[in-house]
Length: 443
Image: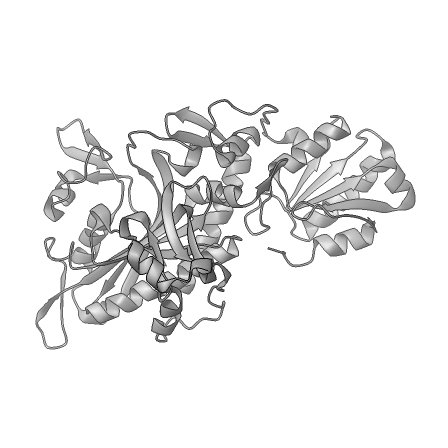
């Protein structure tokens, strides 16, 4: 993409309304613009990041055996009355009445909707287990939306719902999502720690939040330091195997949100030099709630002996739009964002230091075409801006690599390459530059 033809409304000054780093940098980098309190438009650069995050989430959900679908944003209030949650959920739910006087709502979550779909579609134990997921916009009317996309009212969320014949099978489905979440965050360059958490309005008896440690996090959390060093499951993990040992490695060490924190147990189980009391950002939440929704909504299947059995269920959420902010909180410096290659909007920022010069224009066009042919996404700064402004823009938007072409380099047949994460610069021939930039992604 040529920057001269792109929509990238950069802000040179820090926005006064931005309280945290991610909000400030997302506004400055032209990723989002506020539409109203807690509601944002995702501009082209931000949208590309959002879609890359969504792609990783989808790939790991598919790998774990979940099946993608799509449910509506607007739901019938009757479904929520059937589960008993319509009057209990609180003012966060946006309630709507249509032109015929029917009570509707803008979905904050989809347990009722998916349970109705499954109840009306599956009648036999032979069709279990199943895990269905979708990625859809949600709305929760936060009393005080803040921190940009980190705590907005409208947000993009992946929610999955498992359906099993027995509680034992249901807990295995829970473990599969537990492992898939660890892999998902690692692929985004994040260290997310699963922590025992309250179930809240979702319900159930087993729940974990996945937390990224950050000073700007809203949650107070406590955990064992060794969890930070643990590795996510491998790409070839067999999700059909017994995952209890894997999950136990993560859950045997103390990790809890403030609501579940037990100070005496924390001090008893965790050596003083291993204790972490910090703040964190929630980027995912998983629940096993058994028959909380299936029982009142009559979601049953015929078992092997012909008896009707109530389906056992869980739900599993990932804040897709929130992750864009969380990644920035975890990966930035004083100059701007530092994107991991896996989610970066472009892999390479190609900088023409003297646009209009035949030599630099020709070299840039050649490199631009060859990188695109190799499947590398490039943002080509072909504008007439001064060099300092071009470097500042590229540092701000945080593309993993900067490829700089100037008249002196063209004369020598060389380009300067900068690694945004390390700051390392090197001069390489054009061929060597292409070889480096077309190598497999790094982080």
